[in-house]
Length: 165
Image (cartoon, rainbow, N blue to C red; front, top):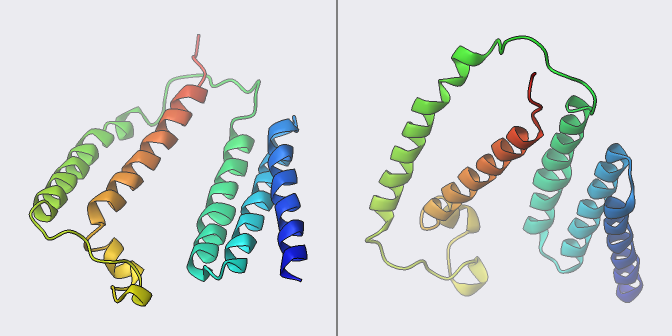
């Protein structure tokens, strides 16, 4: 029974991944991506990794796929922006916020640089729960990952922005 379920999920994940690549309509591709991410979450459940399955559904299938759909809807090809940027003054707030973020990262790095190496992950190995490790021993990599994702999002938005002529 597990083998049949695995084969079904494997074909579902593989087929939806092909759908993401081959389909020309971006909305349909985003829906195929959501199916793919939900199938991967089901595979995690088969491996009895409930936390990963929950994170997969909440973060990826929920938030990222919805973000893709909204980005596709907003960035409709052929729609041109006209006139001056009404948020130009507000965009300068990014400079001090980036400075605060850099200061926070430096303080985190300084406070974690001289600590003992991280312990084993997971209660089965005699270690701490994952949430505690993420917010104590692995706080700097956690913050760097969030900055990297934010930078990627800003880069994608900058690449898709059309020049006003």
